[in-house]
Image (cartoon, rainbow, N blue to C red; front, top):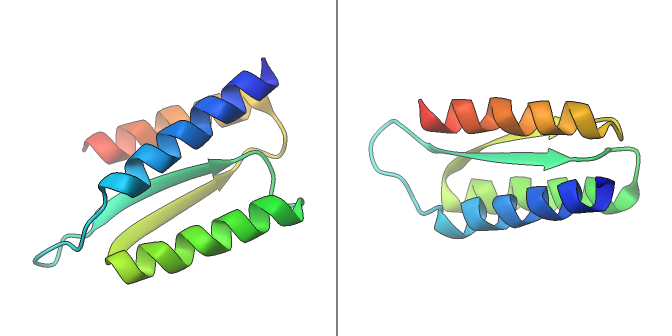
Amino acid sequence: MKKLMFIAAAVCTVCILGSCSKSTGSKKNLIGLSVSTQNNPFFVTLADGARKQAEVSGCELSIVDAGDDVVKQTSDIEDLEYRLSV
């Protein structure tokens, strides 16, 4: 189940990143990135790369760290989904 949630989060993140383009006006596009932990160098590098790409694309990036807790990650993703919809 944990692997499935990670894969789903990664796919959603890639889809959101792929659709981001330079915004016009004062409102920036918001990108949500949920990582399982930032204690793992892989996820730290992933978050750093996402920050750089968001800056280049003119997007606002919100990164949430689930602390290796699948339930928290699910909640974080739902919260990001809400923020992206308003």
